[in-house]
Image (cartoon, rainbow, N blue to C red; front, side, top):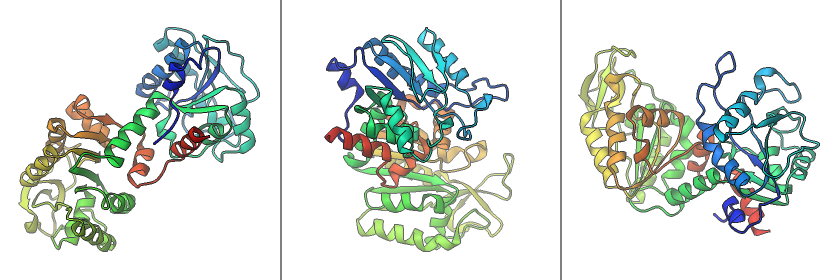
Length: 397
């Protein structure tokens, strides 16, 4: 994907003295007192700000935080704690600016944070007048918020339309490169893991991947629906019986290409959905009517691990069992260890996936960990994200 990169502008000496507007993703969790409880997104956004400052730019950075009502400021919607934390990380003051749409005072070598962009009327609906006012604030617009790349809003899309120059920041550029490597030009075999509770929430992803991947590993409640499609009993397990036909269609589409959806040969069951429930390993065709399938069995885990270790590229979204319960975490752990061991390029995304990576401490062994949940899923669906589309269009202008 051809987009202009902020790093290219810096290398060409085109940033010094320019007003740079960075759209970051600083939407961090906070406790009831407004204290930031986890600052990964702020730390991930700092390199772009540092690049701009080092290049001699006058820097403005903004983000959304939470879900404020447009035009109605409440203290809990303020980026003040975020500005303070970014200031600590940068080792300098980061002044917070409110009511900034009609003008911002910032000099080269300075950085200011513009108050929560979702407080501006027209932000969510990508109001053209608002977008043009934002664009007028800067010489260069830098999109560095992949987590918002699937939304066409004033501060993510409209400003990119009207700014003199629009480019991708280092975080967004890294996502583009990783996605292209994994899906546009993958080293084969390409293995995808798609897991979750419901087929309905990921049906379009499964259908899209079925056209491209060599192995499509399904897990969680999704695997149960595919087991039904394969004629296997699932007892009382979570599944969507009305989507069995869709699951069969995915299996057939894969088969027609000489590819496969591996169906579990053994599973781990329990009678109750509880952390201390007794775990029993059973052959897939021996599941009793009152059983709940809560994980894949050791034989299935070993088969899947072998596929992952032999893969050229791995795309991963979702744990394959109820990994929060230790008795039902062995399948996910086997998958995680196999990804870590594999020489394949791997890209992982989604909240539960990141939790599994953290639980087993393999973040250094995953090729790329995506920062955007919804945006990552839309990429897997085969959609062109609005942020990518407008940046590619501007790069051709």
